[in-house]
Amino acid sequence: MYKVPNRRGTRIRRHTRLRGHLEGGPIRPRLAVFRSLHHVYAQIIDDVSGRTLVAAGTTDADLRKSVKSPSGAQGASAVGKSIAERALKSGIETVVFDRGGFPYHGRVKALAEAARGAGLKF
Image 1 (tube, one colour):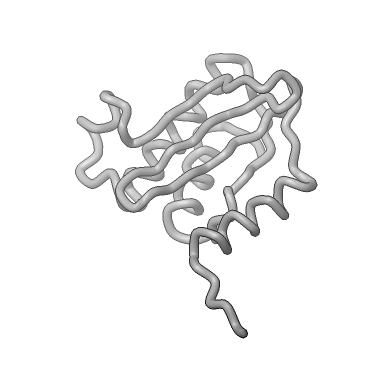
Image 2 (tube, rainbow, N blue to C red; image 1 turned 90 degrees about the vertical axis):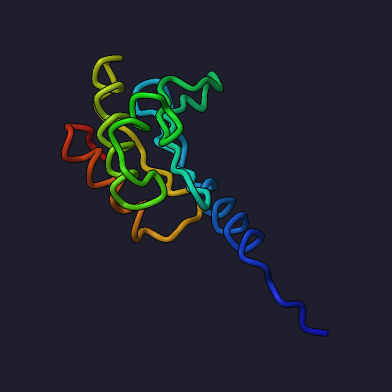
């Protein structure tokens, strides 16, 4: 019998497949992106030590004031700019981009391009 896949399960399978060859270390950590229905979050993670080095999201107080709609591409680009500024302040210049199983389109693409524009290399 054919089982209809749900979107969340399909995304998690894609993310697991991507994580098979993506790994962030202390020299080049991983920029992980998660988008929910209303918000976008980004973390820079050192997978060797299992620590989050830098994080940003549309739920941050400074971004909530500056962004009109946190759920759109404008909010995602603000998160990308913010994560890049915080990473450069922490001494992180290059990262591995982990789109989290989401298509590289829309909010994920806006976040990535804003982070690149702010000086983060990937």
